[in-house]
Image (cartoon, rainbow, N blue to C red; front, side, top):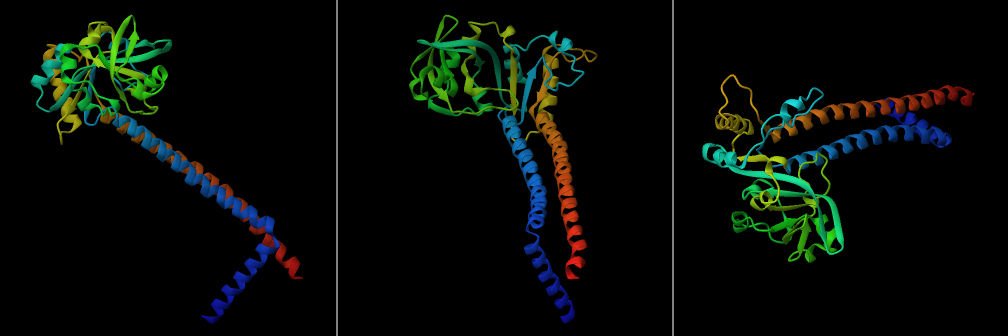
Length: 324
């Protein structure tokens, strides 16, 4: 035991001596190890942060939520856009029927959108979204109000010319968010009374709703100006608590086929897009990215290890010459 401790102590002293004598080699060895560790931490931390951001953006689309549209949101290289383009758009009447027939849906809303140019006095904001929604949209989407209020039931029933604008719209047109409430906003020769400003959301990686750069108005007011048929209409349905999105999707698919009187041999002329599908795709994608990150980090460690081994080899080769 004493002999073992003596060997370890002598080895430790020799190592310290080599570190003092060969400062450049010591630095290069530590630098190689540091680069390898930094690559592992940096790559994996970046991938993890990016995944959390994308998953949070997906959550803004709604939890346990199905989007009924003529388009399939899956995409891919063999995406048959020509087939989906020929499908009929969803209609507001189908929303009411879905609410009556669905037993698993908690909330359902109709959504339409298009781009317009907004103005207030001499300030102009081009190519900005206007969203027309029905009453339960806010139950599905989390819309936090910075100042003022959100749309109320009477606004939806009357189709009032009132709107809630995004934080960017308020800053661009009015200077500050609090100055926007109570003012009018103009677009296409029409004026809307601003009743609220949405809290700043930040840029989304996945597109979807851009609440910083939009105005939300009651659907009836929107439909009095623009045709819903040409305004990317879709129905958004959120399931009841503890109801799996796959079960909700199956039920809605059956209800829509019934509403459109499709025979068992006919293909669906609509798609029930499950938000959970996006989350699973993101998990799979970032799983591959993480594996690639580990490969890059491992390569960096190997390169650093070869550098350290080379320095150690040179040091050991030089020791006999110095001892002589």
